[in-house]
Amino acid sequence: MTQRLLTFLLVAVGAYCALRYNIVAKAFSLTQQSQLGQVPFIPVKDAYDDPKPYTRHIVAVGDLHGDFPNARKVLQFSGVIDDKGAWSGDVDYFVQTGDIIDRGDDTIKLFTYMDTLREQAQAKGGIVLSHLGNHEWMNVIGDWRYVYSSEIQTFGSVEARQKMITTGRIGRSWATNYTTASRLPLHPSLGPPNTPYPSSSSLSGPLSHSAISFVHGGLSPSYSGLSPFPSKINDLSDSLLRKLQTRKQPRPHPPGPYVGLPEDTTKEEAELYSSNGPLWYRGWAQDTEEKVCKDVEEVLEKTGTRRMIMGHTPDFENITSRCGGKIIIIDTGISRAYGGVLSALSVHYTLEPIGKAEKPEEQEWQEREVVSALYADRQDVLSEDVRRVVGNFHLR
Image 1 (tube, rainbow, N blue to C red):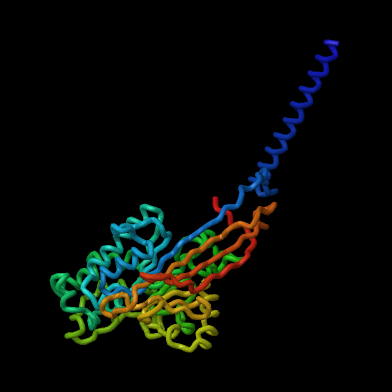
Image 2 (spheres, rainbow, N blue to C red):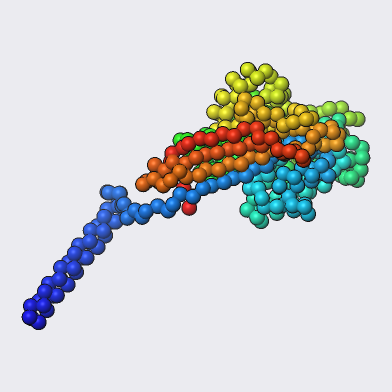
């Protein structure tokens, strides 16, 4: 009996060793072939993790025009900063759409504060997106029609102010931290902010346009630089700003004559600063509802976005929403120079799994985007969009 058991064990051990050798040899062979490009190497597929919900919170603020106290009030009631004026950590993105300068005395304070918030946000995992408005561009061109003499005194002199907004601290921040346009994806699968659309890496499928565009004035349907967005606009912006900041500074107008753009400005750069460009365009605010709701679809398609947000054209009582929230204008005259209502825009985005599919690419999700106008004494929901989408949107 003992002999027969010993024989059985020896046979079993031998069979196990042979089987293990064959498996290892086969795997090694497949790996070699895969490395040689002969057959694909397919690793063992583990069961994927439970799908997890994703959220993103954005707050956007329009024209501030030299009013630091009112800017602080808006940022506090919108949750961007705490009661001490520091980054709260309660939002993921803070977007400011330009026109911080002019019509007030707090230019230095405001631009310094924006850079401070940028650093604080980064330390807490947040991001500040800053834009140049038409008034920033006017100032660097030498068009100082809306500059108060009392504001010039905060710089010390006209020459000191020119230096500060060209090669000085504020000018360097404009060149480094500010853009003329932004595309902010609502989900990380679309890439980081300002990932160009379209591009070779553009995501196709149900989330391809889950993004928002931000500019100061507006994206005209007939503007030639819409694509790729926003890189075409921002490349032109960087080039023109560099020319303006490095040229010999003209005497400001007034009292000097209006000098305008540099002699070597290209046709595309001139279009950027034209009335049809993203800094000055007002059509989305001023054209009829029928026209803008027809025109907006083509612009959203070209820019890979679902809605566009801009400042520039003020409504002193409310944030303006048109075409079901596809067009939102957030300039409400926050500065004391206008006496408008204090306001901010909030976007809450969520992507939540519906159950769990057998395969990640078959997973169903509910996408929800709630856009609200925030005021000191109330909150108005402007748009609430809910969609059901299918795909692999898992975050590792």
